[in-house]
Structure formats: structure tokens, C-alpha cells
Length: 349
Ligand SMILES: CCC(=O)NCCS(=O)(=O)O
Image 1 (cartoon, rainbow, N blue to C red):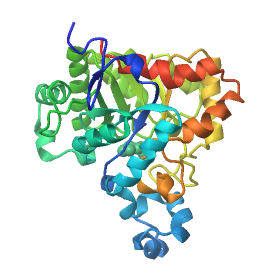
Image 2 (tube, rainbow, N blue to C red):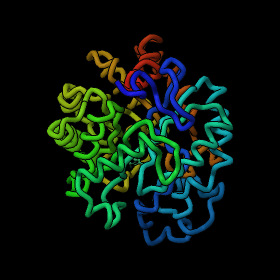
Image 3 (cartoon, rainbow, N blue to C red):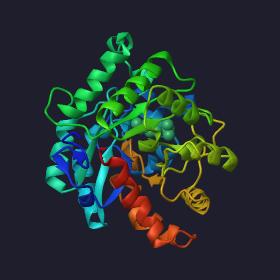
Image 4 (tube, rainbow, N blue to C red):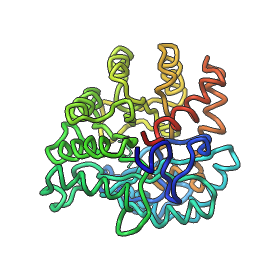
């Protein structure tokens, strides 16, 4: 039994799980996403490089990763602070902030936002995808990586005494790289020591979530305390989804609010609409997985904020929950998805 046992660790310290309330399990409040810049089509260079303005918002919605400016969420802290206050007014209690090493985690800012808004913020330990790994990270042994992750949870991250309460989002590509495999093994070892929640960013292939789970399992990870993110852009076939669900992780639909025609990182993918996401949730609930589902928006670019006319952090509470209730998901099941499942996942063993 550690001091963390039975508690949730936020950037302001330990809290009782009952205090969390409605929880978005996958958001970013401050980060940079330049690692995933996607060059615009030759004819779009002008709009891509122009300052963001009203007349370009539809282009930006379809091409969010082709504008350098859009990738700097870290420049929008006043807008994010306002959004968090709105999130509280909408009935939100907690946000899991999944920014890890490689995409500019700023844990001091997370603490300030938590203090100023009253929203519980849980910060993430560990590393994002391979393209963001430094040479130093690549050279590290699994043991060294484990020590760093454990220290971010027990002692604080980025030279501060502010502690992470979850490992992840741990980034993986497809195929999973050697460096990512080491980080996954370190994640499992750290989870064994700490009894803590883990959250994974899988590569963009239907086989990716299962492959990650196998690596974690072989390294002793606790799959029942692990969230598999981004399923809404990763597994489309319901048969394959049920095969994956049997492995026992939490199943996360976290791109609510994202509707775009061409998903640049995998043109094979037809990004679902929010209505289709709700249908997938209803399907999983009908198949008996109501205790495994968690949801979020994964805000990670500027244009997803309400300041830019989009959904922000309260869209699920304001718009998706009413839709879920009309599509066969009961109030009790909604409460499991928004309150009980995140609470169970985030509580240290
Ligand atoms: C850092 C945010 C993130 O990884 N979001 C997932 C984007 S995508 O893989 O679904 O395009």
C-alpha cells in the first residue's frame, strides 16, 4: 500500500476519487504539435501561412495540421482558462491532460490553470511518438526510462515538484518502433511499481491497439487499468472492435468535435461524424461494455477552441450527452462513461 493508494493525483495534489465528477479522459490544455505538421497542397500555401482569420476557418477545419500557427495551442492560455471556467459551468469536474515529453508539456501552467479555474487537472508522464524522441531518449535503457516515468509520478515532472497522475498519452506509431517498444515496456514496469493509470496513443492502423496491448501484457502491464485512445480513427469494423474490447482495456472515443473530409495522416480513414461516434458508443453499450467506455475531445490545436468557433471542452456535456440519451444510452450509463469509469481508472491501486 503506497500513499497514493485509493487516491487520484492531480497537479494540486492527491484528491479523493469521489471529488472528480464528470471527467474528460483525453484533452490538452497547453502543447505544441509541430511534430505532426502536414504540408499544405501547393495551391493552399497562401491560406496555410496567413494569420488565422474568420474567412479561413473552414479551410482550417479541413486542414488543421497544415497551418504552423494552428499547432501552437500553448499560445492560447487565456482562451483555455475561459474554456475551463465554462467547462465547470457546464457541469465538468476533471480533465486528464495527456501532454507528454515531446509535445511541450508545461506542468507549471497546468497547476496555474487548476488553481484559477477549480477544475481538477491530472497531468501525464512519459513520452509521445517516436518522431519526438530525442537522441538521449532513444539511447536510454528500459530501466532508465522506467525510473524517469516513476519519478514524474512520485517526485514531479520537468524539474518541478508537480506530480503526474497518469502515464501517457504514451505515443506509438504504426508499425511500432524500437524506441516506442522500450517506452511501452517502461510504462508497464512503472505501472507495476505504482499501480497507476496508463493511457496509450495507438498508431493509425486497426492492428495497432492490439499490438500495443500485447507488448504491455508481456511486460507485466495492467490492461484493466489502461485506456486505449483514438479508437474512433483506428478500428472501424465492429467485429474487430469486439475482438479488441475482449482484451479488457478502457475503450476511448476521444475525437468528439472532429469532423473532416480527408484525414491527412491516413487517407484510407473516413473520419466518423459525432453521430457515428454516438452510434459506436451505443453499440458497445449494447454489447455489455458500459463499464469500459470513456470519452473526450482531444483538443490539441487552436482551431478546436470556442474562440475559433468550434467545440471546445464542453461540447460533450452540452451536446453529445443529450444525443446519447436519444440513442438508447441511459442516464445511468452516461454517468458510468463520464464519472464512474474515469474515477475507477484514475484511482491508484
Ligand atoms: C497530441 C494529440 C494527439 O495525438 N491527437 C491524436 C491526433 S490523431 O492521431 O487522431 O490524428
